[in-house]
Image (cartoon, rainbow, N blue to C red; front, side):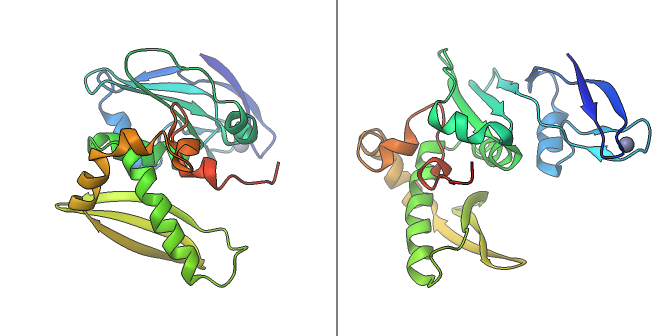
Length: 208
Ligand SMILES: [Zn+2]
């Protein structure tokens, strides 16, 4: 679909931005999401690479999931009222590119994202215990699986430094066995209820 984009050089142009991306038909999309080049366009006037945020749906029919991408600008509105996503598939909403990247990594590893967000809650609590400055904007996110270990990254504790938190897969499996029950309990229900499954909903920002 043609979208109008205005560059920082003030040049205005139209670019073809897809509304729907099927990962089974475009296999290189996963790689481009991970390296950050996904949905980038270059300005025909100054050549600058831009990453405009338009809503789109990412589908993986084979693995049975679907992700609805919402631009960062619509964060507050979406957290208050997530869009209704119908279907038999695992349907999720993500806000902004870092949430998209994290969700795609989780699904690619065929992990249950509710379990990941559930574990992130405890990692975050542990991290906050050790932090004296409660105003700090700390962010925990799933990074990757290394064999029998899940690696999480922690941002915002020290400037320009990413902390690493490792959890054994055994902890994941234990949480997985009880995730349906946990998902209906407070406080987990608040951020484990689809389609917006994200700890960011719990630590929601108040800058809008
Ligand atoms: Zn430009």
